[in-house]
Amino acid sequence: DAGITQSPRHKVTETGTPVTLRCHQTENHRYMYWYRQDPGHGLRLIHYSYGVKDTDKGEVSDGYSVSRSKTEDFLLTLESATSSQTSVYFCASSGTGGSVYGYTFGSGTRLTVV
Amino acid sequence: EDQVTQSPEALRLQEGESSSLNCSYTVSGLRGLFWYRQDPGKGPEFLFTLYSAGEEKEKERLKATLTKKESFLHITAPKPEDSATYLCAVRSEAAGNKLTFGGGTRVLVKP
Image (cartoon, rainbow over all chains, first blue to last red; front, side, top):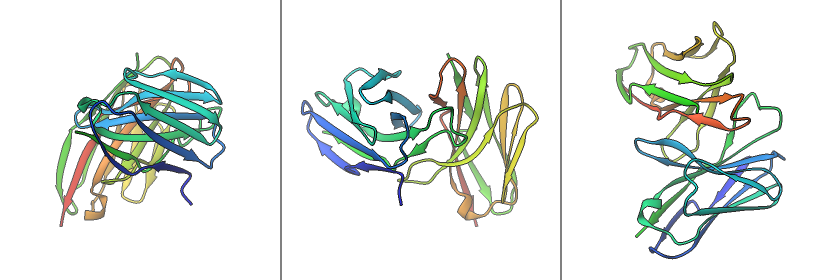
């Protein structure tokens, strides 16, 4: 009954290769977000979307791109993976008007770039 | 720019030893302060939302309070199952629906 599903859950990739992480939500939420979580930095916003085909950059967007072709799906692409992008990536969503819950989160994708 | 600082970074407690976690924030127009619990290998799970100074929320052994500059998460008589990372986040007028998170407090409760 997960509201947000992320895939894959774990991935190991080589430096310089493109990588796409997927996020699927069944909440019919308008807003979707990609965060990365690193020790000592907490959760930092990479990109977010405020509607289909409407996206904007967060505080750590360099080296990442996103796409949202349907309400349910939000893709994060690492154009050419680097070791500094080794992290745990979380997708989140929220409805309009400011949800009382803040965000609904996925379970995360652990990405290792070797 | 919204800023959130949590302290301490880590907390080791004996079962039954009550303590408090701090979340200090700087925002322009607070539109909500959120507490989440995160277990290893999982996404954050919602605990509480506070909107105005003086507000308090309780759930089992957890109680969250809010002032104009900080929030506290009090853990009363903790049990080992309360071991987790606790995250604080704020939503502001300027940021719209986006949340800004603190670095979290890792809590370990030993039996």
